[in-house]
Amino acid sequence: MEKLYIGSHVSFKNQYQLLGSVNEALSYGSNAFMIYTGAPQNTARSPISKEKTMAAYELMKENNIDVNNIVVHAPYIVNLAGSGSNYDFAIRFLKEEIKRVEELGLKKLVLHPGSHVKLTREEGINNIINALNIILEKDSKVDILLETMAGKGSEIGITFQELKQIIDGVKYNEHIKICLDTCHINDAGYLVEKIDDVLKEFDEIIGIKKIECIHVNDSINDIGAKKDRHANFGEGTIGFDNLIKVIYHPLLKDVPKILETPYVTATDDSKEKVHPPYKFEIEMIKAKTYNPNLIEDIRNYYK
Ligand code: ZN
Ligand code: FE
Ligand code: FE
Image 1 (cartoon, protein in one colour):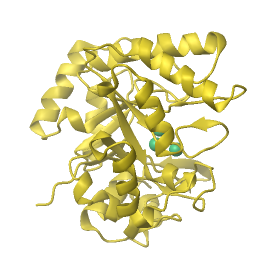
Image 2 (cartoon, protein in one colour):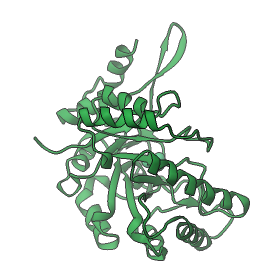
Image 3 (cartoon, helix red, strand yellow):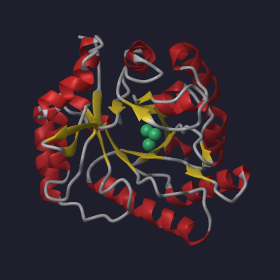
Image 4 (tube, protein in one colour):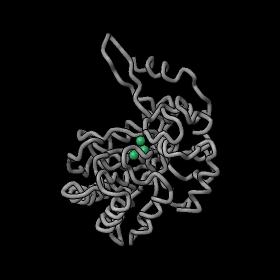
């Protein structure tokens, strides 16, 4: 059997915490997954429960889910490229977040490098480097995975060179890794269709071994659009075959692949509802066969 670590973003609700996340991941047929330790949009966080974590690990063991295939994503609003009190808060929050990730027994924290907003690009990059030097310690148990960004607004990390510049500035950069997002690199101008060339370029600039997570999203927008709008798997401008090539790429076989594709809307009893697409997208990925009725199948299943 071909090696495949596939999963999606799943919820982490305080009632069950990681145990709930594992159960949700299993319900989609996943052997990998990604969580936010609270709401993705805010930084309110609850303490980690040891009991729930231990129960989660029991379930993971029964189902052969390896901790290396579980990633945590930092909230969107944490901006290490900013300035003033927001900047100080971001640093404090990430230090706390790393402790939470450690308490969960996890090892990978995905982070959007930041947006420079009113500062210059260079100032933004320097702020990120400075912050990471405060946050990361020599014997850190958690690695930070900088995500490749689409280039929306004033985002930093939209070229491999820019990410390399950050890595080079960080003292303990053995703890800095990369999360490659297929939608984001498309929107930033990289041709996913030519993934061999993209990976070759990545390897020359950063080193392929640094890729520790892949967000396998399709994109609503054309290459280079600098937009960042995810599409369901095979339903966007990147397309099914190109995404499958990334997922089954021999150089990426050990790397967990995470779906951050949008929930599907449906109108049931004249109410708008949203349904997770992941079970059906994962089925397509495992079968390597495009399902032209993906959206309809999801709506019918959750009816
Ligand atoms: Zn992200
Ligand atoms: Fe992403
Ligand atoms: Fe995105």
